[in-house]
Length: 115
Image (cartoon, rainbow, N blue to C red; front, side, top):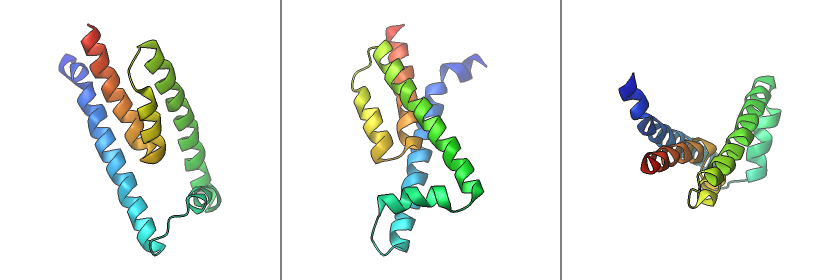
């Protein structure tokens, strides 16, 4: 169990790679489906209007995203991590599923350096 806890940063990195890759993959499929056009408002609107299940997942995602974004800011400032703005930018420009686990990975490395 101690080995797992000592290597949890690799799990965060794996999540960042998988989350970013899947988000990118489905975004590309959406762009192909819309003949090369990406409409960000249509993208956001589709998660709110499709059905009640989609709305449930959207509420779950947005609540978690807000909490995770707050954690990036608070922990980044508390630990005096450099470039916390980069994780926020990656979260918006790539995917939350990429930016947040990447922040957790870098946080673990930062904590290891402090020890």
